[in-house]
Length: 114
Length: 113
Image (tube, rainbow over all chains, first blue to last red; front, side):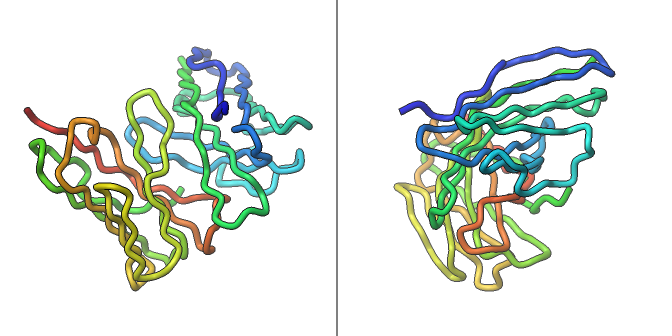
């Protein structure tokens, strides 16, 4: 039973560039959430996707966008990268419509912006 | 963005000791979760709490949902080396809600030889 998988594991980009991170949810899950975790901090909610639409969004600028595909996998896109975007980006999946369905996290993509 | 306040920020203990940590919020949450994160990995759910006053155990771990709904506590008994890591609390305004979780700042647990 595959858990949440994310790719790539590490990425180095330059300021102003664009980046795409990918996530495959745990088998049987249909909802994907993205979190940003800065060094020494707890994860911060970016947005959640269900049925290929953004369902909820945290306090992040429009430079952060996402997509969910029919197979429930998801992408996180960040445009015009800033140094402050350097962080661990975590993907989490869950099953919608299930009471108390906990989030299952992947191991993240470590993004470094230079 | 908002983060829950966790204390202590870090703990240095000897193997076999008991550990206590807490998490506080300025607003009410109706779901409290405790996660552990090891280096290079994502957070793993330890305990979920859905009712004020609830006390739930998972092996040597026990967590409590504060009656004010503005705090939660995690205790670890008889610590072992694999308990090392960062412990995060997380909260949600709804019972069982998992969209837009608010996480704490973390408590880093280190076991000294």
